[in-house]
Length: 62
Image 1 (cartoon, one colour):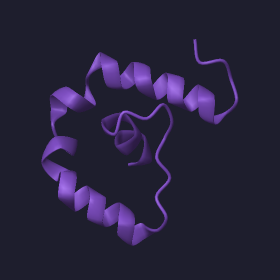
Image 2: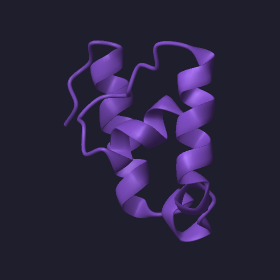
Image 3: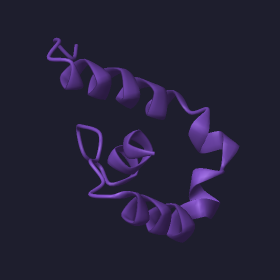
Image 4: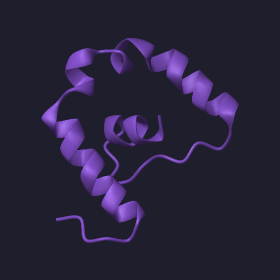
């Protein structure tokens, strides 16, 4: 969920939720967009996820 929020919010890294309730509230507010197969399977999301994961683990995000 944190990776989807980071992507949708235009951040370069995964979003860190403060607690479970915040995460559930965000999921409920964005469920239509989050369950869109074209978003989940998009090349843009996949490329963002690789770069964000590399940043998370301190690797070069080329």
